[in-house]
Image 1: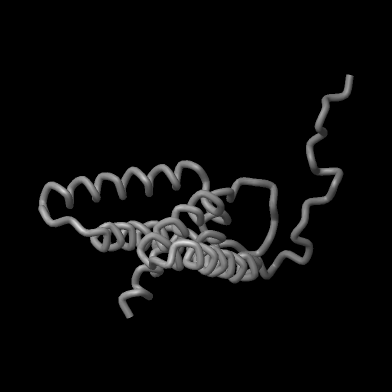
Image 2: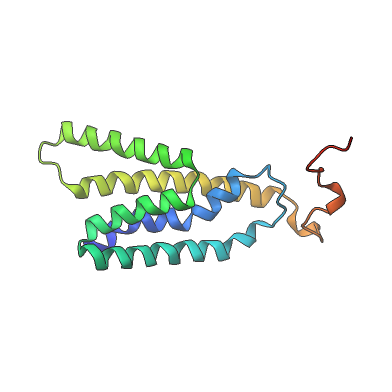
Length: 157
């Protein structure tokens, strides 16, 4: 059971990666309903599981495997500022735990990263729920923008 806990933060971050990307780029000219992200969510979880399996085959250590897989998921599936926020927060938590607890273990870093990942996922999930419930997605029959409404790449002279 302890080995499963090591992989919790990466699984949470990979499950909410598509939601985070969807709500981060709300103002983009992409018109897709909120329920269109579920295939991307399943794909994100599958990528995390695949990375974890490959890394475990290489390292044979659950702690190292889960930390490296989580960092890879953050680097591949999240925008750069989210990656920096998680890395900075985990570093601060690691330093704080090192000062408070003299006998520091790597499992305490897993706890801090799990708390950070739950916070980021909850924030993305709340934004996603707000977006999905407020927008009239069912009333739109055509969810793509017509080509004549897209701005020209080069101004006409």
